[in-house]
Every structure is written in C-alpha cells, then in structure tokens.
Image (cartoon, rainbow, N blue to C red; front, side, top):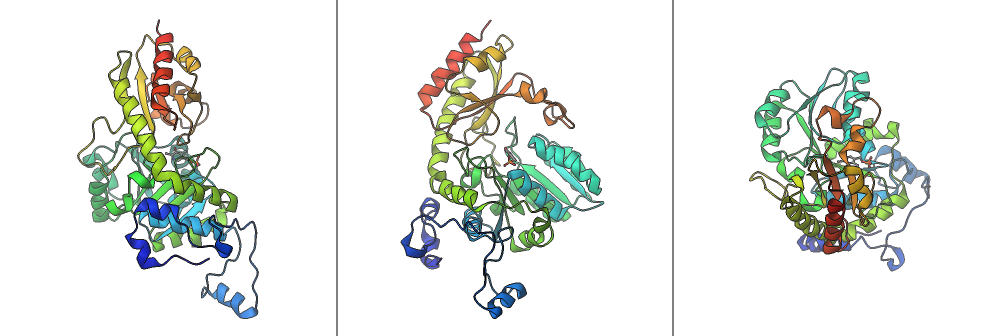
Length: 392
Ligand SMILES: *Cc1c(COP(=O)(O)O)cnc(C)c1O
C-alpha cells in the first residue's frame, strides 16, 4: 500500500479525497480486505522491531488490521484529527473513550437527551467504577460552566437525540479549557461532512458509523477521532483489553460508504429540510424539531442531515399513522438509504433501568423520522396520506 503524493493531496477538496483511496497492489481500485487474524514476520529483526515499536508492520487484527487502519487514516483526515480508532459499534467507541478519560472518583458532566445507551452507560455501568455523572441542559452556557467545576469530562451530543438540540461548541470548548475539563462529542447526527468539532476546540469526536458513514444499513461500527495523545490513551490502556475491534469486512464497507458520503449527505439535507418546512406549515403538526428551521447564530453545523422529529397533534392516532405509512418503515437506527419512523411512545414504554426518554421528558406525541434517499415528493405524499388517515 502506498500513499498518494501528500502535497498534491492537501489541495484537493474533501469529496475528491474521499473518492481516491491510497494506491493498492496490482492497481486494485478498491482496497483489499485483509481477512487474517495475524500478520507474520519475514525475519527475526523485523519482529523485534515491531515489538519495540520501531515499525508499523501489522501484528494482530484485534489491534492493527490493515483494512481497519486504512479506514482510521481516512476518517482522521476527514475530521481533521491526528488519529482515529475504529470499533465494533458506536457504543464500543463511546465506552472506550469515556473510560480512557474518567476513572474512580471522577465526575462526568453530560448533556440531556444523549443517546439512550450512552445515558444508561453513564448512569449505570460507570457508577460501578465510582464515576459519577451529572446531566445538564446543554443549551445553557451558565449551567454548563457551573457543572464543569471539579469535573473531569464533559460529554456532548450536538444535535442531540429526539429533540435535535444544539450546543455552542466553540464557547463550551473555551470554558472547558479554562477549567481543565476534557471535552468529547457524539457527532453522528451531522457526520464529519457537516460538523468538524475538533476545529471548534473539542478534544475527542465520536461517531456511530452504523448511521451515515455506513449509509447502507448493513454495518454496526464506531469511531473515535482525536489527538495522538488521546488516541494512545485509549489504545494502550483501554481498547486492547475490552477488545471491541472492528472487522476488516466492516471497515471495507465503511471505506465504501465514505466515497458517497458527501453526495448522500447533500440529498438527505435537501429532502429533510424541505419536508421539515412542509410539516411545520401543516395544521396537524404542533412542533418540528430540525436545527435548520431556526438556525442558531453560534451553530457549527455547515449542513443538516436527514434526521429530525415532529409532534402530532392530539387528534392524530399514532398507531394508525404509523401503520398507514407505505414508504417509511418502522425501525430503530437511522442514516441509511431508507426512510424510517420511530414513535417516542415505543421508547417511553421500553422496559429496563434508566429510561432516558422518560427522564428527559420526551413527549409521547413525538415521531422521529430519518429521511432516506427516496424521492422527496413520494415521501411527502406518504407522510400526508398517513397523517390524514390518522385524523379522528
Ligand atoms: C446509534 C447511536 C449510537 C450508538 O451506536 P451503535 O453503533 O448502535 O453502537 C450512539 N450515538 C448516537 C447519536 C446514535 O444514534
């Protein structure tokens, strides 16, 4: 594997760089999938050099599978970070990253409306390690500044789950530096195409690559991008032991997804913004939560993805609405080619400890929708028909 000429690379735009991979043996356009658990050495000295850390010869696929390493390089460059680590899921990325910063006796401040399993991880699992969490309104700088006192880590998700609330990344990063707090953000919603948190001063960026980076609803994966120092803290002290590695096959699918990511994001943005505007003007909708409808002056978003939510008025029967949809499927996750709906009532009824939808007060009238790559007018007709047929 040779890298393309670097000086030439830096002048190219993001979408061009994403299409052009490193050059591969035999002129293969698509990277090889290294389906091998271990990588052998040709001689004694090269093996010793690898263990001494003087060589980047691949060793073992829990640590440095070359297909996974190629994905990591590409994502690090895309987010503007020094290094990246890939994981077998977004939650593996989140748990490894949090545990690399916070330890016994530390306090984590986390914004409200984070991803439900992030909430459960902090509220439940982390307390076993004497890591305490405080959940706060991420839209208030004063509240955040107050909570940051004595904290080790500030965990952000912007825009966040269900309500798509944004946080002021630049101002928060500045405050966190003042108080010596490490900052981390779940950037899955915007994807690296529409938000670059590292450039805003945030320390670590996390993606559930199961969403837009995959884009084809066929992979579960996670990514962390940061400085070499933060990434080393994870891959020396945490990830080898938790072992949540990404497979070469899934890394390959993500490399494929990256080539069309800018193109797909533009289409998701266009359709979702159009549908959000139409829903906002529709009589049976009481609220639309989409960060593009009333953009914040402090926003670091350079575009909008396809995920937003709205509230159906009291007269609309939610089960009838869901069942009347023909193009939108009902299901969890988002970010794929297919449009999906997810009524908040389903997560409000979810059994188990620490229900974030209940604790953060998500309204039972909320419907989350992920706008896929279908024709916008077809999607609008489907939504309108379902709303009308669910009116009492
Ligand atoms: C899906 C999701 C996750 C978890 O990712 P997995 O790949 O499912 O483990 C984390 N954060 C957000 C915002 C998500 O939507």
